[in-house]
Length: 445
Image (cartoon, rainbow, N blue to C red; front, side, top):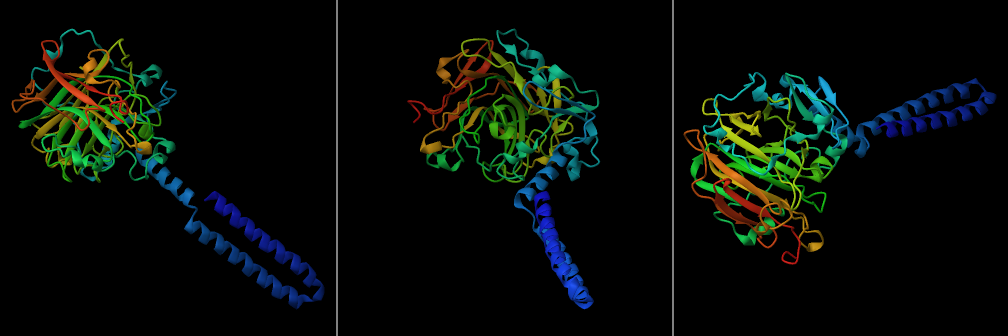
């Protein structure tokens, strides 16, 4: 816009300069001529200004986009009480007052009273305290430079570059419309109709589920294309697997398109219409209400596992409060992060008919071949501990608000030659599975 204004102002000055040159000569011919041309000169100035204003109304497309981005940034980035900069992963964390967080932009939450703790935790929650050889990956790198004070929540600051990487400003922070495959009725012939999303999952169905839990091995899979991602998460699912799908998703992901880097980051997602118009990642729209001042959605997780070396994992629990009906999220053993208000969902208003755990990767098929984007550790399930990624202690919350192992666990993958999954069960890990793969390889052309 500034360039347009400067250009048109210059045009106006040139027109005036030309007219002034003409008038100097006319002064020698008499006052009438001079008066007439003064009048014409002013009209030229007015015309030039009107032209300038019209150009500004039309606007430079690039400048219009920047204005739109700035409007969105103002909505995303709330005024902080404190900011924590120079995080090793490049993030800026804004400590925003809990009552000013993005959730309260939602019209149904204008007069909402924040619930600072759940009414009930699932029973037998502490039964997962068995000693294991794994270490919990709990540190977010921004902690090295400070913490957020009480009555605030940490929010990763959104930058202009973050928004400009999206396919459109309005789609920033949202997944592309896609169908989650139904393991019970998957048609291999429809593989190419899922926008390249591929999965290697375990699932439970056939009951009413009021939550799910898992301990997830943390890796940093390689992502080939900037518009692809690789994630490991749990899904709380309701509705059909069509346009009315309700989903709550929590886990870790590597997404260059969303974050501008290849760090492994904690994330959440929700939708009530199969990713069409509702929901978003993390706190990039109104919905999830955060109450915790120590963990930032979308911030990087550290440390991560090494192939045939040290292993790190995180525990995720999502459950429905039997009293208020909100869906709560807990990270690790100590951090209750917040909740999704019950009104956000239709088919999750009471319970969920299916739970899924596992990995997802996007195959954009560059050059017509399968992408080399990895899932999990980038190695197939059969390689086992310290080489393949795992989910352990997978559990569901039943109608009595008890955490327990699912009665039956199935497994599913669209292309087991690219990414696969193997279930297991033992005394230390309970129900578990290994999953993942390298993407393009000799077995996955």
